[in-house]
Length: 57
Image (cartoon, rainbow, N blue to C red):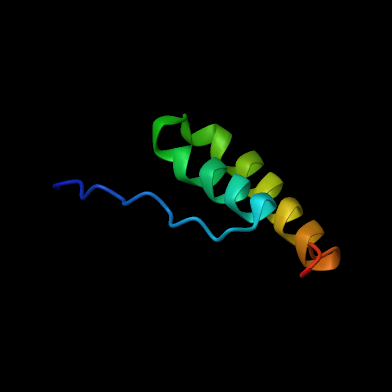
């Protein structure tokens, strides 16, 4: 099976979301047993951002 490169995520302009995207984007180089904790951290980070959105001003 041929692997297709995954493009880097496009920045959203929201620092907290961009950090989560970078965290998840780096999973391909990490061992499989590290994936679940990374997804849990990503979910928690996104949940926190949704619950506490950055100021729109």
